[in-house]
Amino acid sequence: MDPFVVHILGCGSALPTLKHNPSCQVVEIRGKMFMLDCGEGAQTALRRSKISFQRIRAIFISHLHGDHCFGLIGFISTLGLLDRTAPLHIYAPAEMKPLLDLQLQMFFRPPSFEVVFHAVDTTKQEIIYEDHSLTVTTIPLEHRIPCCGYLLKEKPTLPHIRPDMLEFYKIPFSQVGNIKNGADWVTDEGERIANERLVRPADAPRSYAYCSDTRYVPTLHERIKNVSLLYHESTYDEANLDRAERYFHSTGAQAATVARDAEAHQLLLGHYSARYSDEGPILEEAQKIFPNTILSQEGMAVDVKN
Image (cartoon, rainbow, N blue to C red; front, side, top):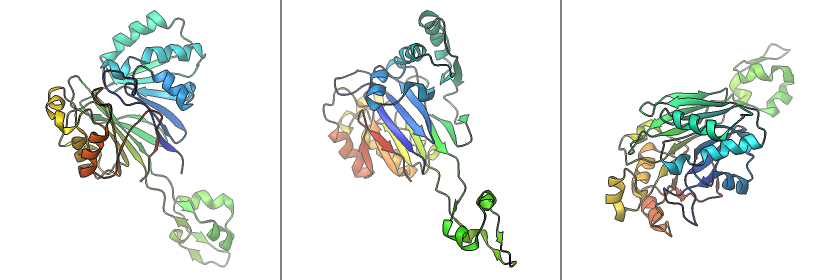
């Protein structure tokens, strides 16, 4: 299968610490690279992860709190220094455009490549990016300002050819495409070989839901049903539930409840408050509800699996 990997560049919350950077991830899917949020320190983390700056096709910003976007103009400026020529697509709430335009005018002259801005409606769940192999869909979230997550999902692929059957029936390679698309095979003797004998089922499409800053939303699981990997913010533990409610954040237990109800395959926690030197209590509370839970940490590369 083609790689589908989530690279964690930052998983802290608003206050940077010596342990964590603000929010930033890179998702590698079917040979393409997409960045999710771009907090401070994104460029250094990219270097440490040995990810090429030039491979980033698009950046998806969840909301306009600084720990999710203060690194953006610096990253764009560096791409200019690297003589990028390919357009860079930015998907973000509409309120970001005048700010980004002002920064580009101030710090990005003359541009060597085009920065294409796409305004995102954070109140709707809709496809905002699509190519031949994947879609990116918005996930409305509930935070103190307009905010949305993003669902990256593979498109279904064709079934796998069985090489042993090709050899047994002496099927020419030129017919592989037809068989993958459902055709039977007729031998020289006139025997029809049913398509299901010639192929193995296609791999199930994998998906990744990035749910950044949000309070617990009881209906969120309906939007990400059966997701392969769910990243859900877990700023606090249950002892600080009052803070989570006050600041429109979630606890690890609440994130696990969303994962359980969504029937997710795996849960990835992150966006930890700077008050924690050890996120163990957050993980323990989550695992009691959803055992297949892990903590995100800078430098991790998490495979998305079904």
